Length: 356
Ligand SMILES: Nc1ncnc2c1ncn2[C@@H]1O[C@H](COP(=O)(O)OP(=O)(O)OP(=O)(O)O)[C@@H](O)[C@H]1O
Ligand SMILES: [Mg+2]
Image 1 (cartoon, rainbow, N blue to C red):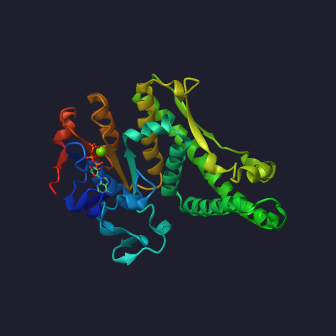
Image 2 (cartoon, rainbow, N blue to C red):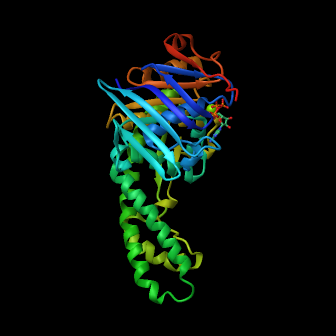
Image 3 (cartoon, rainbow, N blue to C red):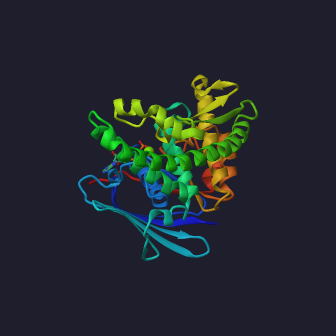
C-alpha cells in the first residue's frame, strides 16, 4: 500500500519548521481552531498536486514575512521515494529522489489526493468557477494531455483577450492575427471539452451509485455537463460571437465558461435540502476515488473538518470503503463525535497552539 511516511515543512502557512510521522492507515489530526490542522493536510495535498486545494496563488502558502517555503515528504510503496516541493519568488520546483523534475506534467500523478472539505458544498450549488477548478484539478491528475491543453488554452485566451483590447476601431490589420489565435484556441478548447465530457459522464455513473449507497436508495442523482458553447462547431460559434467579443473586449465562448450541474429526482440541486446537498458532496468525492483508482492505487484520502459531522453509522461506512486500500487523514477539533472503533484504529496527532 502506498502512503506518506513522514513530512517536513518549512515556512509553510503558520509553520516555521515542523516534522511529523504518519501511520499508513488512519491519522486523526486534532487541535483547536487555527492551530494548523488544515495547513498540515494542505501540505500533504500540495506535495501531490503541486498546488493548494484552497488557493490558486502558490505564494499564499508561504509563511507571512518569509520568502520561500518547502514541503518534504517521504513515501513508501515497497520502496522509498523522497519528494521536495519548494516555492520561491522564482516559482515552484519539484525534486524527486534528488533529481529535479523538469516539467510538472512529468510528476503529476505520482500520487493522487482526494480531499473532502466543507467547501465541497460549492460543487453542488456554488459558482461555476469552483466547479471548473474541480474538473481541472482532477482531470489533470488523470491525464497529462489535459494539463498541457489547459495551460496552452489559458495562455492563448489571455493573448486573445489582450488583442481584443488592443483593437481600437478598425479590425483591419489585426484580422489575420486574431484568426490565428482563435484557431489555436479552438484546437485546445476541443481537447478540454472532450476530456471534461468524458470525465463527467464517467463520474456521473459512480456518483449515482454513491448517492444511492449513502442515502440507502432514498435519492437518485446524476451529473450533467453544461458546456458554454456548441462544442461540435466551435469555428461557427467563434465567428458568430466575434462582433460581441470585439465590443466587450473579451472572449465570450469557450471552456472557461463551462459548468456542470447535479440533477436529482428530476430537479436542479438548487432545490436540494442541506442534508441532500451534503450527501451529494460526499458522493461526488467518493465517486472521484472510484474514477482515480481505475488509473492508480496511489491515493491519499483527506477528510478536513467533515468527518465529525457524519453520524456514527455513516462514519463507519465511509471508513469501511476507504480504509481497506488507502491512507486517510481526518482533521477535527474534537474527538467526541468520532466513532470509538475508528478512534481505536487510528494514529492520533495532536497539534498545540504555537507560542511565538
Ligand atoms: N501564509 C500564512 N502565513 C502565516 N500564517 C498563516 C498563513 N496562512 C494561514 N495562516 C494562519 O495559520 C493558522 C492555522 O490555519 P489552519 O487553517 O491550518 O487552522 P485549522 O487548525 O485548520 O483551524 P480550523 O479548526 O479553524 O479549521 C491560522 O491562524 C491562519 O490565519
Ligand atoms: Mg481547518
